[in-house]
Length: 584
Ligand code: PEP
Ligand code: MG
Image (cartoon, rainbow, N blue to C red; front, side, top):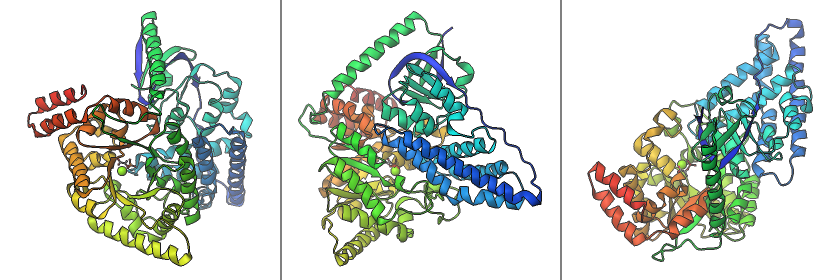
């Protein structure tokens, strides 16, 4: 009897194969009281477990082949850093002494409070980083419980090592970075996990490896047998079970189509993104880590339109210093071989993990709180080294600086003053920089979009962050599943603000790009062209599909349709016109 399971499709493609159920049970943690005389022994037992965990991770790190995606090493390094952090080295020790409890229980108390902090965060990426806490905690628990005295005797890893995963679809509750290192050499066809979102390790790794993946398929392991034939549709987020010949034929056909399509898309790499009526469109890429720049080069993007530098601040108790910032930027500049790079200053939220423990109390509504440029302007000790590094990097290649979450023009004035001061500082130190470094701003708060003319007068370029612009315009928390159905990029208010911003840029004679998820979704390409957009920035994997849509569009015709779209007050007509846009 065929049936389907549903999750979130995070890496597109179709896989047809047999499941491999990865069982990894959560250790049972109970509390017991430690007699006074041996409390210090318990502390030592905990500290020893940290040392073993560090050794295990260092061993795993050595096994990472040079060909592995940069993400993989970054995940292991992040876990190693966590093991050096006071949240793991000191807090549980204090708890053991204060409560006279066993090390496992102290770690559980600490884990629960850390997870609570992550749950309260508004940034979707940082929220998913609680997975890292769990992966590290589970590793220490297994060591404490003597379930994992040495890396190779870890049941999960041993099981993975012993099994040939080639041609299998791995189904797990969640995958740790260490799992993925072992898995990636086994020729896995697809991943299905019960937990995680589009920004989880599994999703990131699957996209780097280019294999289909579905995450958040709750209870998948309860419904799927081991070695069961299934189909994974990584685009729709569906797992099909109980396959008959008809379904198999259909999906084999889809697989062939997809391979053919990828071959066709690859042919577009050397071609310009020009519309049928000869409008040249700029296609840039978004990156998070310096290593991501390789994918940007591979897909022949025009440059980097959004480098999210906040990832440099993560999983550590101190801030990156000027030299560390500079080294990351220089790495990207070198990889891009002369193409422009837009470095966004840090877009951190009210988050203890990434601000070196100096943030204030967790606020009740972090999306409206101290984040991004607000936080930078408040904490100049954190902001200035980044400003210096961006300016210094500009001596080595075409760099632009971009400010996130601008809300008022006064923030722009403050930033420009700081940039001027930083230039003077560098002059005094005799360090070179681009005197004309372009400084641009993100338009992602409705107030900034409405007053885009003002911003355009003082800035060198604008970039529309639709992920946040939609959130704030429609009052929908972008990470809240309950209201996700209302997150609508096609809402007329959103489109009006996008068009208004593009026009403001045009009037001021400065470039306007769009770097939210909308830019990389080919369903919206024509709509954005019709709104007047001439620069897109997106995940490199989406770039060729968007280029194809551009080559297939006529901006002149689309402009006319958009005029009608934004004039109509009739909801049915609005939907009809939107449908028409897809065909032009
Ligand atoms: C956006 O808000 O659209 C954006 C690109 O920034 P981020 O997703 O990093 O908030
Ligand atoms: Mg944003």
